[in-house]
Figure 1 (cartoon, rainbow, N blue to C red):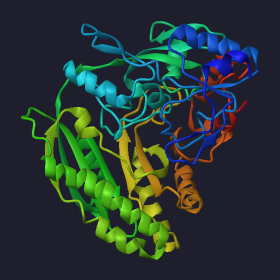
Figure 2: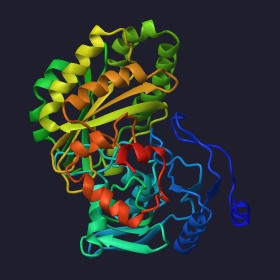
Figure 3: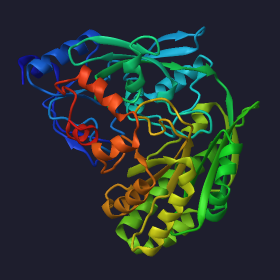
Figure 4: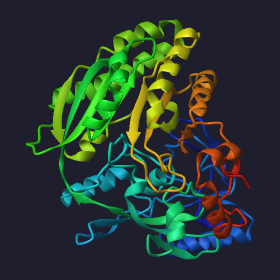
Length: 441
């Protein structure tokens, strides 16, 4: 550890949001500029220390874990430029999505699609392939029009379809393996209204009508409650208005009291008394009532998630999703497993990013969760076996056991990514054990 690092960093254990990953970096650095970051990379390389950028720790894997230098982007935040002619916004890499969304709304602008939480930094969310659900609109990474990347030797690269296009083709979902992203340019559009329609639906009906529900709605998703035949569906479609957000009281009851407060108690009880979980699930699956509301996009797409959990998610060819989900249900029904969290199903159109879970194919996502502190290995292993039998691609930021041998078989452009990595980071300054497993060495 050099004297420079000792003066400029605070050290101590780092833990992710779920608490399932811990790292003990030699130093934690918060550069205030691109030049400071480049100098940090050069010094780390000279000292033989590896480097990993980290966002808010919402990944469930060790993507950002390091025993070297941990780069926190806390001081690299804010909007650099809004280009209303090109309809883009350029934002510093450490900017939380919630700050970006509110700032864009003030300017009368919005991203086209987004995930269901907005605590992550823009660089962290895009680097791991964060996505929402959409018939025609894809992940947050697919909305990137350019990015600024500092590579292992301190070079600052601007990447787009016309500038360093080979890097742009892979860096939009880069896993922190190619360099440190310092700024991202997103496509935006004038702010619009979405009408959300949430309603219960039976498992048999939603799976039988899945193709039609996806085709008829711009954004469709549903949650199945294990140990029951109950689902909760959500359809988001553009609206001409007027805005009709949830009432303050009814919104608080649905989004805070039931989805967070009561659910937290139910999960705690289920962890303490697993035999009670099926009964709890039957009650929980009927607790949320049907509702319809209209608001600007980030207020419809996202919601608070205060109950902490661990998660595994796989992307499947869209046509395989229903069969795979039915297999998951059959597995749970015949097993001694007691599952307290609903299973989430979403969709995405094909995109052109090398390591996107939707790269080159229309996809559906099946995500399984368990309350933090609950043993998850048996459940996740059984689900993963089903997902991989259908050629599933694991979410890069969520628990999985896949390695480079498997992943190179389900990603046709896997070699394109690793070739760019070999060129930009031949000495693996940005490497760690997780990347060694999923990308090879």
